[in-house]
Image (tube, rainbow, N blue to C red; front, side, top):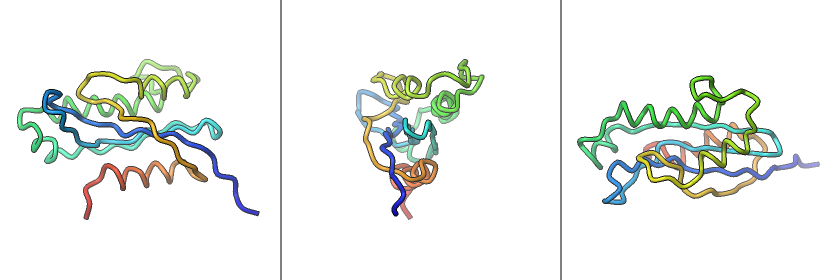
Amino acid sequence: MTERRHVFEYAVLQVVPRAERGESINAGVLLYCRRLDYLGSRTHLDVDRLRALDPTADPDDIGRAVQAFAEVCAASERAGLAADEEIGRRFRWLTAPRSTVVRAGPVHTGLTLDPDADADRLLRQLVLPIG
């Protein structure tokens, strides 16, 4: 008998330092699996790539903004959320369209046996430098 895979949703965190140029770098992933009551994130801000897009961008400020997404996923007290805050609502709030320097891209779906492993895989495939 094969293990049952569960539907998950994910979005890539994008950093858009200069909206007028429309250029972005990927800085993390958000992953939500309702069936397994899972909401997680993985982040990595490549400062060299950020500076290539905008030499005036402040990597510390942008890094804090990226980290804020992770804190909302974890329902950390720093994010002002209770641990029992419904995770589906948090995911929908995080992925709602916004015009800020750090924002979530479109939501995509997949199937998972292990959402932690898939969050790691998506970070490697979509965010971390190749090579």
